[in-house]
Image 1 (tube, rainbow, N blue to C red):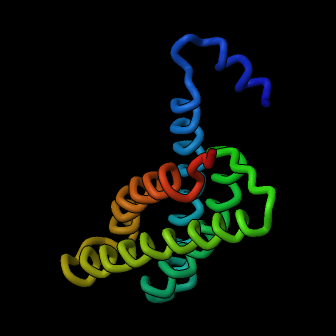
Image 2: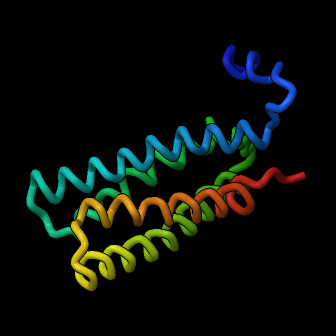
Image 3: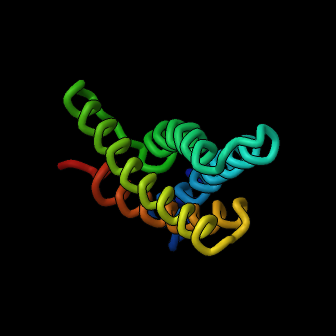
Length: 145
């Protein structure tokens, strides 16, 4: 356990649930930053189509998200290959579902409503962040008894 966590645990209102949410917001913030910066680099610097950029940004951010969520947010321990396989497949499976939401909302906002690509990406990330937390907390990294 980290020194910071030990100090925070001394606060009477600081619970495991609050810690999980706080860590998800921090790691989710980094994940979102990776997603948006990668998207921006692909669209504005490399001048790629926003749909391709969105897919590349998704891959980069989901890889980071898996490892950061497993280690820092949900502190998941999977001792067997079967448990690891279930966790990995459910993580990437649910992330793929939110990628579809991400992709469709991006098309709606950009091609349908004419919203700026970067602003559309930012708003879409809010929706995806919430969905990903719900899936991660209650399905993917759920503590098994």
